[in-house]
Length: 192
Image (cartoon, rainbow, N blue to C red; front, side, top):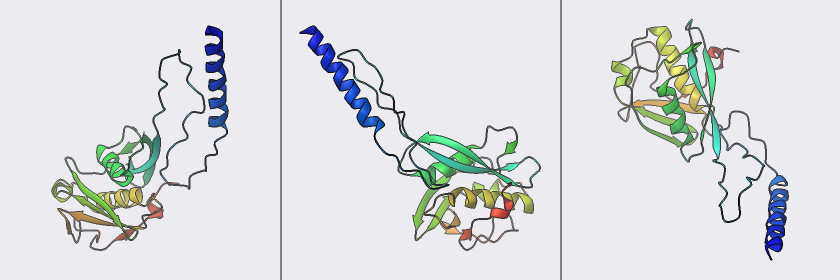
């Protein structure tokens, strides 16, 4: 009887391995945060122990400035899959970078209030620290706006970004860049 149970468990493990390895995963579009393909190996367990499912993740690109303040560079983050990837992207942008070659351009203490997407426009709402704590001049403002817009337009369903402060449109963050209307992606500021 014990040998039959072992044989049955072995047969089920092999069948499960064949089914999992035969699943076809479509390749994600460039820049599209999608679930990473989970490992196709089956965890071996003792009879009676449950196998753990691998956590699904997604990849998000967040833009930070180069140290010379000339360009933005995309930084890839692998994060748990969730239903609000645009919000996650902005939260990662606010958190800053761990890369010593890059610097964060987000003002200190800024808080994200909300991110919504409607008709391919992302409305990203910050508290007033976006303006009050901004210390950059025209270059800093250009990099700040570019980092927000380019980070969110990495998502294929977002074509433009409207920056809001406390739920309202603003003319500018620091007096140099017009942000009163939705802005498109700025490829020329990205370091190639």
